[in-house]
Length: 206
Image (cartoon, rainbow, N blue to C red; front, side, top):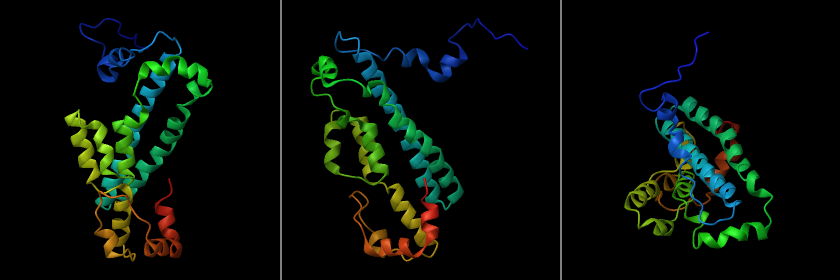
């Protein structure tokens, strides 16, 4: 068995790949309460899960656009345990009482998870869109530009409907031609297609 290499002339390959030294330097609490560190790291971990889920759902969307159903389903299957892990990320702070949370919450001022740009990307790729939600990000042009781009891109669900249309399902033209920057509205004809075919349900299993 080869002994692990312990000396490097530059940052270790692990650190170059994971950037662990950067990640572990990003925790800068805004209060003196030791419990804030758990809240801060939990929030940062959730941002990483948002990033991964957006990646997977965009991968699925783009694969459907190219009629690569197998690749789309693979991405959706990967996202299932990832979504469960995101939900589990709350556990380190789930037992906090309101009093414990408020002991450092005031130091965060107007900061809120509602301002998360990556969570907004996650909403947009799923089709929950609103142009007004770009407003909090106007002060960061690069972030605002990326969100504006996502606002005007078809959602994962839009590409599911386009895929089904190409496979011969009766998706109404007004649905296919809709303004994708708007939140999707329920359509009786689309729902009727779903009721008539178990194939649709199989394609959309997460």
